[in-house]
Length: 496
Image 1 (tube, helix red, strand yellow):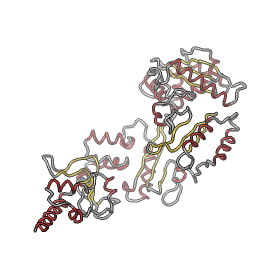
Image 2 (cartoon, one colour):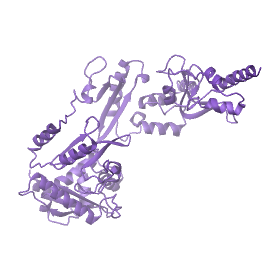
Image 3 (cartoon, helix red, strand yellow):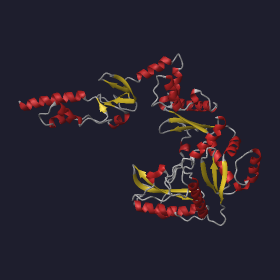
Image 4 (tube, helix red, strand yellow):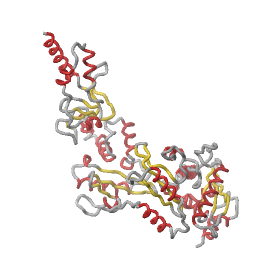
């Protein structure tokens, strides 16, 4: 069936549309404009037919596809929802609503004719950029107020920076980079450059830290790659391979995708579709897609008694969620974020910050079961006491929250995370400083006291010793007081 026949069928099905041109215009490549009911606008380009591009936009919004123009996708979904406040499952209904509500104007038909691929894409980019500026559609423009625009970038050929990439748009000399080239940074320091070559498909090359070229050489190579002369899609791989060979730029080779590496379970047996196992971190993951919405959850070692149970639970919950309507309010159908909100609304005694989706689900079920509710409360109360810290040496303890020994509010306090204590009763305010000082000996206070000047007062002495105290820790008072007594005895001995 030809595109024109499809279009005619749609026009017969959908009446009262707001088209401003002949139906035949939609069967050509070129630049087009969408005008939504609230007068917001979007300008786009296509080297296929404008009709196909329109259907592509609708499918991206329908399937909630990642990438692309998220502003436009969200606008389309909002438009469709406003009809009955619910997204219809029938894609034909999306087309009907869109064509009735949105004006579609063909701004310019642009055929390739005798142009090369490079020349044709440049023409499309330049004309798209021109019309985006004319209709003020770039939402983040610095040249005009784009609040009525839906374009998330100024056009493929534009040299105006996108706000989100400003920190990558200058070279190591502080000069503005041309469109299609951006810097590669590590800890805010430029270590190389990335260049994009636009043919029918985008080709990108990264010249980063692993290459020994100077920054000037890397920038020169990025510019050369961006300006490669590619006359056809067929020749593109050969030309790019020749460029890489010229500078000995090797492609990163992989032994397989992450997905394929995780398709075997802990017994090296193949897993069902949508179930994955990470052998390094030893967790199972299940994922599924319902009506274009993706769901992914992990089940960790601490969630189950064994790897066999982890695998069994991953398979069980994937099947359970798959057979649950997307709009169901059942607990297992909620995201982790919504489970946390549910716990807060119900005021359940459940620790949420370091608990997985599966862990939250199981403990909520305990709280809502009269026979196991007290067990859940006891588990929460135990977290407020010192226990052996997992993945730490023997003698290291951890506790949810912290203990304050002074002031009117002394006692247990919910600080939102675990605190840690080592074998010498030094308390660490969080896990990061605790891990930093694993295996580190306490300061040698005997040596420090012997090296201090005589005649120090208590406050001066304490200030001197505080220089040796680890950051983000407390519990040093016993060591400081003991050292003070030793210092006073040393002073008396010296005076005697």
